[in-house]
Image (cartoon, rainbow, N blue to C red; front, side, top):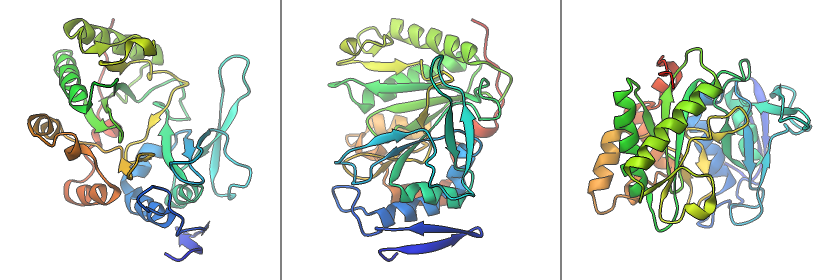
Length: 302
């Protein structure tokens, strides 16, 4: 890519600029960010389509200032759709961007929206989550392998409840575990079940697991954030870049990969996927996360 260009994508003209500008310390440029999102768009867009996105922007790179953008900017092209989402009581509604097509995703990437976060529900039915999520976050000196151990605990417990689940790396230090639902369910239900499951795991592993929101209790433990199952919360989208020292991607993985990483000496590095790694994985393995979009499961009552 040149320093500036106008790209024709799906009949839309997307103006891009400063393509040679490094956005990561190692020199990964905005042009390379756009190339990644163009390549991953076919598998990423289904996880964005119809959802009110929140963009985390890094205009001068990951080592400089950042901000979360919920309101879709006024200077957006006319073909970038928006959806109005009611906020918490006392707050104004927010008109979020809809990144439903490749051109819109590339437009967002040109804003240096490296990270794209999505709610658990589609905008058309904001009170109906399509999945339940557990966000496993290690408090140092706890590490990703500790998250894997707890993720396997979650998998086994959910299996006993008759629920299948899928993991993806957070792209940083943690792990996300998704339970596909795609049935009539409420956030009250997903939050209650998630809290009950997380609490049960914490009782099994009290020295390693914390489910309390207090940050003072997180050092040395894996925090299972069940509260992400909320109408006002978002989680980084599958296949999104992350603002890490080197460009990393929140990547769907298999349980076998996690078990192998846990057993190997280079277990953390094995799950650090670069944009190039992810494009190769998708070409070879397809979309490992696809059941999150299609599989129908019913939550047990609590």
